[in-house]
Image (cartoon, rainbow, N blue to C red):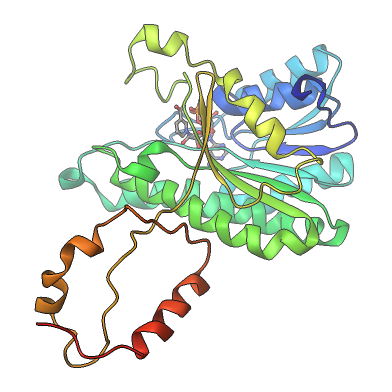
Length: 306
Ligand code: NAD
């Protein structure tokens, strides 16, 4: 079934599509009938320099295989120009894959403002600018599909990646809110934490592991999530790589509920700490309102044990 998914006449924008995962997405959609905007700044994985070559090579590859594609060389920080390229070349935009990214790995002790700011600019502001520019088109046509790119480092933390982790977890909150705002306009947004061999990972993973992590193996999940038939998976967090696909969700412990009055002290919490960390009867919250019923319950309780 997935082998038959097509994207004929849809316009797909892939940021950072000059290599790695972005190239794999772009060539896939180009081979399945989509008109592709191949965006890439053409810099180093640390975010230095720029070149038109990375995007041009991928555009030429898609065209040589009989597909349609156009290059864009702007930084994702100028997302409006990338979306303009799509509209000027193909008249619309249907799918946006926010994939561009860089690394500035350094222990937190040695992290500079520049290491922090650059990561926020490319990952967070970049995804914001591209999506913000596409959003009015999506709303007007009552159709849009967005993939944001998080990372295991963002979800779980990773040594030397405080800047990258913060930027990548931002993609989760961003996606969860866009999913809620976009739903009634048939704008579906999901976020993925991929794992794949690329210039980003080739220096930190052993060669035998890299061989089993082709970027092409992240593509099928993205293909499913951005397809027009996906009208139900919205706001999801997924992991994909090496043939594995899984969904993640938030889990809340059954928790400790106390009366919120003068008897709500550090001692009152400590006395029942095991309840705070008890995951034997978990909840799976999906929005801030899930919390409100607890508040009402707490208001009805008697004073707390000290
Ligand atoms: P990559 O370095 O091969 O690809 C990233 C691309 O983004 C590059 O071609 C680069 O030129 C481009 N880019 C960088 N800054 C840009 C900017 N400002 N504007 C436009 N393009 C820009 O790395 P990759 O592994 O393919 O990574 C793709 C995405 O997946 C990134 O967001 C990365 O953080 C994320 N990711 C990758 C892995 C992995 O295992 N490879 C794991 C978790 C997350």
